[in-house]
Length: 364
Image (cartoon, rainbow, N blue to C red):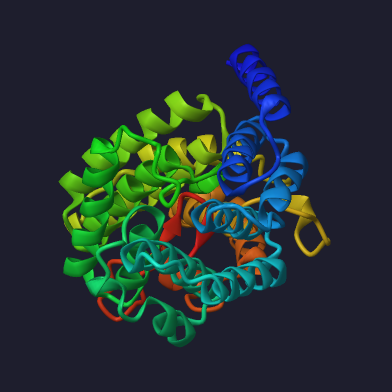
């Protein structure tokens, strides 16, 4: 796989060097090449260079609007994943301003691009725990014909977080169905890059649907969908990638809540899933509690450790270890809308459902 990605970069660099730089169409095709390069860099873990490629597209003056919006959408997604929340908000605001400034003559085209810009800002606000603010950007997207792909997924996650489960399910299914049929990438208004690339969006929508089924108590469907997501994630990113750890964490939480509702026990399954999840997420040692340590995917690690702690707390000889895990998880938890206890006990009707966005590995 690394060899193929290197070859892909060489081909894209060659294409970029042979393309003319003048004119809207020429600049748009250069932008598409840079978007593809940024995706390859992102997939190899080189976020710095991926961001640099996207910033070049963001600063284009003559490119088709959809190409620039795709770059800014991907930038906001990467900054969210990296925990650079203020920067993600700035980029999302610039994306909205860009769409307002450059309304194309074709309203149908503008509707699709404008939906994406609003959904990017809505996603940022959702990740920041600002539901009311997020609502103002998602408002009206249900009627927009162009609300598809990443925009529809973000809106579905907002509906999910606000307990509008049935409509959220329709949006998740819409994303999965539309992207499964989309074979033509010539439409410059539907482009995606990095963690907003089409294949990753489709995978994230399937993951969100699995979480939704679990929140609705449909554990059989949830297990089938999340297991399918796990297999696809391993195929796309490799069997030990942190994104695999994200899916494993969600699977473990599903088994935990299923066992609670059915008054059964699945401690061995949960413990195995949590252990693997924490390994793939590269969780820091418990001794780092209270120490200023940079942790990637902090809330996911905290979820895994919090769930693992509860599994250990019922074992007399491992209670102390469980308590240490619980303290670490509570100290690391950053979600402003949902407490760690609420996130772990999502089957309680009074609790706010927590949604994990697989694109950014953020809790919503």
